[in-house]
Amino acid sequence: MIVFDLSCQDGHRFEGWFSSSEDFASQKSRGLLCCPQCGSESVDKAPMAPAVPRKGNQVAVSRVNDAVTDGSTSEETAQPVAGGKIPPEMPAQMREAMHKLAEIQAEALKTSKWVGDKFAEESRAIHYGERDNGPIHGEATMKEAQELAEEGIAVAPLLFPVARPDDIN
Image (cartoon, rainbow, N blue to C red):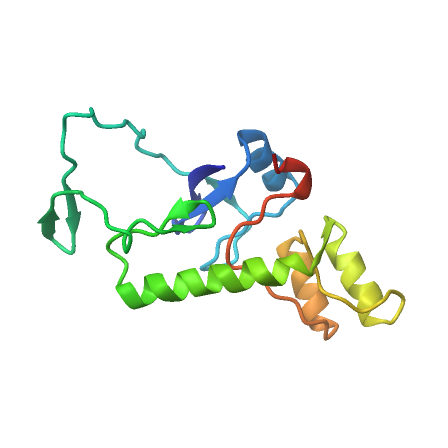
């Protein structure tokens, strides 16, 4: 997974997780990227600082709520969520909630069928009784999701990124 800093035309910054640079370009060209704050589909990579690892004989120093720490991590601050780490400055209750949400999503996806970019089509088929009812997940543009909602079809974005089944090792 690659994590990119992204920003929309209104300057909102957020992270995006992709399996490759090509995956980012593909999702952008298909209109699958949107700002979580304003919904803008005009999203680009934001400038990022390079990730340069420290030398083995150096101690990391980081700022957390204006307090300097020695950079050491505990299990509490280094738990992975969707392939990454929860920031240590996140309150403990928020970290715990994020972990629980990630676990719930992972469990729900075990019984859900991947339909890829046919999500809107498959959702309609299920809603109108043309296909068997069952949980599905896939990709939809913001416009497709809005159209589904206007038709009374309940859809919701996944909280954490999900790799396409074809991209999983």
